[in-house]
Length: 361
Image (cartoon, rainbow, N blue to C red; front, side):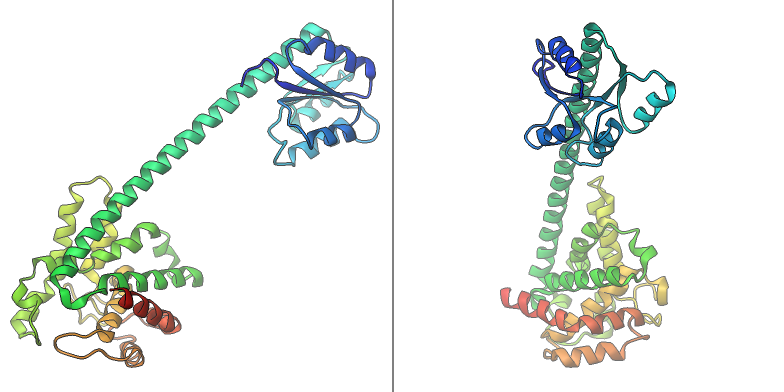
């Protein structure tokens, strides 16, 4: 902001003071003189000044009342105000400063003093605006960098998830559908205020896309098992169960190549805990109840629902209604009872997600 031709509004009901002030400042600045608070606010409707010189004792609205109104308005609250007054007591000066004035000039004022005070405060305003622009630019840069990182991480997730789905081609759309279910469940938990301490520790914008990696460990499962057109033998099922720990290992390897570990912290929980069961009969660790991380309990419902409504080599697709019934029967044994209650209220929306994504696959 160039100081020359800055706009200064001088408010005083004394025409002599207006004339002295205009003569002292007009060579360098654009000076608008107004004789009352009413005229000031009319002027502010059409232009915004860089500084206001404001008399305190005016008929109608006093300078104190004017500055209160200025500071309560988003448009004018940052405009510096310098009080002009014949008062010389410290309490009056303190009152003005407490209301937001940046300075206090006693009348009658000398033109040279007025010029210097105005120059000082316009310089401070210019520096403040410059700092604000710098901070805004810095925030924009940080936001842009964060968005680039987020896009890159999502690209990594999408690529790895698509690779898993390409190998396990019997589960087309499973990853996208389960991510959609997780998004529904998390939003509803937040809306209801459930598990607030746990959820407060999440970055939900990172958690939701990281759900795509819950089955990433299937990369390490052989095709003879992964694509077997029938039920698994016990030894084969034992090998298939290892996709949970394989998933953690895969994500650890990805994580070592980036500093953005928060993004993959959630993914490891989804990968490692989504086959744990509320009663402790799940795998790989046999965790029980709330010892199972909440993302794992969420994915348990999302994963099972999607498996039930989908065709598998060992079974036909079940109806939405039958799938909901099976999950309801697993309340308190397979699944977190609280989450099953939430699921039941969202069951219709689960079906909408499944239908929409399946039709696009």
